Length: 203
Image (cartoon, rainbow, N blue to C red):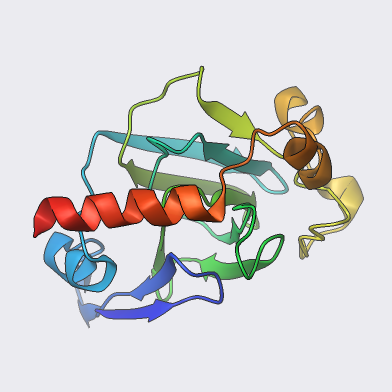
């Protein structure tokens, strides 16, 4: 597989090697050793999630308090989504910026995002099934959200705004500025210290 760092530090695009014949296709969509070589520590798998979304559904922008945060390894098992990684770490050189990766059935890419980064996606196919490997179990006390339609972040959805469907929770989420003012965003220094502690555990 090929692993490419995205424009947001701490996020990577993973492109697997597809081996196909007249029976179909085989691929390794996750390799713990290749990821560990790149990130500096393994993904400590604690939970696996799957969501099924109809076209136009937007999920996110979601993140968790750091520590412990929640690293995510995300791929589309069926259908297509445009996946967004948003830098919400206060003080980061790319704070407020984002990058995106198309997850679909042709190249079958995945994305890995480190703790402290925001995550969202929009479903582009009539139905899309997305699976996540995550480093922490769900804990409502540390789960946070930011409005995915915040004009300051300006996520570029490839669908008309009238076709987007958000949960009430995501609609009511604060803007990036409001979340920063409320002190609920992780800081760049907190995240760097946390990443270093994970790296040291493996050395």
